[in-house]
Length: 212
Image (cartoon, rainbow, N blue to C red; front, side, top):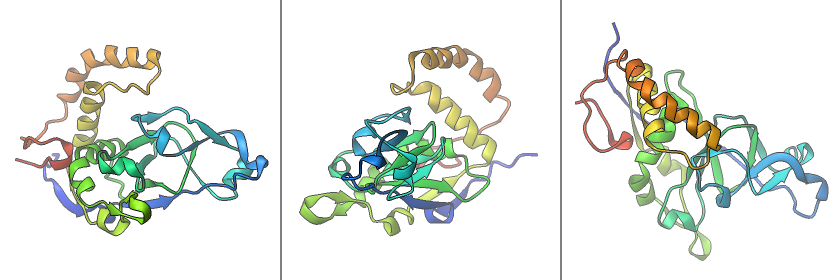
């Protein structure tokens, strides 16, 4: 019998953060390859299918970091943090710069897609802990971020919540053919998700949701 009990953790008890970087721009052998290299300007979508800049395999080995598809990226430094908290999920092997962090779940009972929507729901709280670095640039200090409370439901409920939110919030970054497929799946979703009962939830979005 599945329990509906939600557990409360500090985010840092559930994930680890990985830093990115920038290969030397003066070395042409690092740039112009096939590997997406994501920076703040690419973080205006939910899912990353490409980027403005690309690096080579040699570039990945000299100054940046590669993460697989399905990895959450968050902005931790930049003026965007004055008004928004950009969060996106990769769809393929992707490198990224030092203004971003990759978020890697360390618990087997934490679904990455649920965590993505949890970050979106926590935007106001996370912006509230941002401060200013040099020249007025906004930043998120990782120790503060990792202290944010994560209310975690059982894994089947996480997956149901993520599936519902994915279909209710169209992803403009998704190719048109995929968006159409998502619309067709929407009609079938209620029959599927009803098999996993949900506890009564407090209103306020995934970021503040908890068992009622």
